[in-house]
Image (cartoon, rainbow, N blue to C red; front, side, top):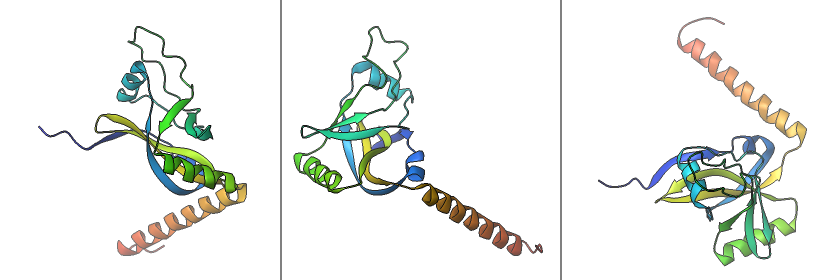
Length: 159
């Protein structure tokens, strides 16, 4: 039996699209301890509030919640500890250069398994202002209203 190439997504940060203008993204490996892998396979993780920082030419993931696996025999060191991300040196240098140029942060968007290894999709993001968020919500609501009107028209109902 052939193993699927990409397993289902463990966690997705839907709030990132609301809070940030998302830009260029990369797939990074993540260094985990044994019980953390089991907790991820059980589908228990949260990326909300997570971010990554470049520290001494390495990228570290902060604020991602991976709870302790209930059946583990040893303590895994904290559910929100910082975890190292695995990227090529050229990619780390490029990300560091763009972050230092101004106004960008590194945000995790999704956490998943690929070929049995945990991966994190990170993107460069620029924070949205409050009016940007309201504008995005208003555009989405207008698009929904248009779809509803078209649906009513196609069904032959008057407004």
